[in-house]
Amino acid sequence: MAERDSAEITPWHVYASRRSFLAGIGAMVASALLPACLGRDSQVTQESDFCKSARANAAGDELGARLTSCEDITSYNNFYEFSFEKHDVASLAADFKTSPWTVAVGGLVERSNTYSVDDLIGKFPQEERVYRMRCVEGWSMVVPWLGFPLSSLLQEVRPTTGARYVRFEGLLDPAQMPGQRTRSFDWPYVEGLRLDEAMHPLTILATGLYGQPLPPQDGAPVRLVAPWKYGFKSIKSIVKIDLVEEMPVTFWMAASPTEYGFYANVNPDVPHPRWSQASERRIGELARRETLPFNGYGSEVAHLYAGMDLRKFF
Ligand code: MTE
Image 1 (cartoon, rainbow, N blue to C red):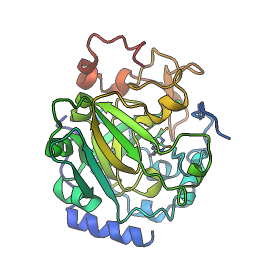
Image 2 (image 1 turned 30 degrees about the horizontal axis):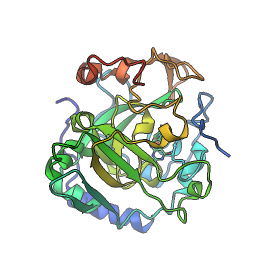
Image 3 (image 1 turned 135 degrees about the horizontal axis):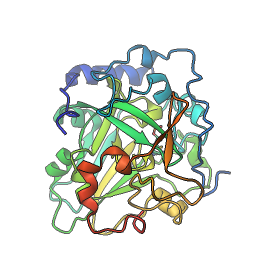
Image 4 (image 1 turned 45 degrees about the vertical axis):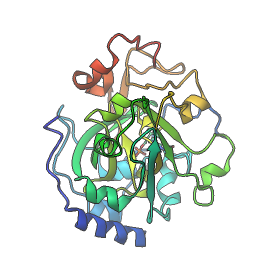
């Protein structure tokens, strides 16, 4: 992991002051995730204010792939609370109010607590982590996140012995989120991890990307990133984290249980019922590339699933 734990690149007070600055300017059916392989990515010609200040320590991932452009990461988004159209999310989310914001951490823990995002950023050093993100729809990106290990937060609240899973809940606010005014889905967005997955050093809570606080369309002010899983596990705009005993029913499991499982580990050998998962298109590139088991993180995470039939536990 050492190569991903690159140095803390933004002192938190600088980070926090930028956050408040940014705050100032600041009938889809169940089977809605579609293979967006004909995507209109890379069509953005005007550089956004966010991307004018983009910076990253790394030029690419540890496999030698270049970072996806800031413009693509911030204009090609899945965030159904705002829109089902990837290119509409950024404009519809532009005025999303992400400050003040709190994350309530509770359930089966000794020390439940409600943290402001500034608490989280102040308490846990922010690191740059360059991760591949593979969407279940068949496209992928390489993203320079800023964030901190979820394990740091969980260690602080001290899960009790009965805690086996972590349940994450996104914001429910139909007044701000037009997608939540449709009844196609059961809002809010919910995700979950097994406790050992949540404690894994690759799993982070991201608070920024390209050296700056997350823009709304990418899940401001705090989202999950578990890079060996399909992108839909990376729940955006989290308000609640609970340690629980039972496996949570996630947003996509509820929407389409035959298509989306709890584990959702990237697996080129298990096709989605409606399309293959053997290859993917890196946003910004034309040719497809092979999809790697566990999205290329197998040496670090495969042991978590020893003895499990990964076809059954998809
Ligand atoms: N989180 C919430 N709250 N709502 C969503 O619609 N979409 C998921 C995930 N997290 C989603 C979400 C999906 S399907 C993907 S691929 C990623 O976010 C996309 O992240 P990005 O837009 O930052 O690339």
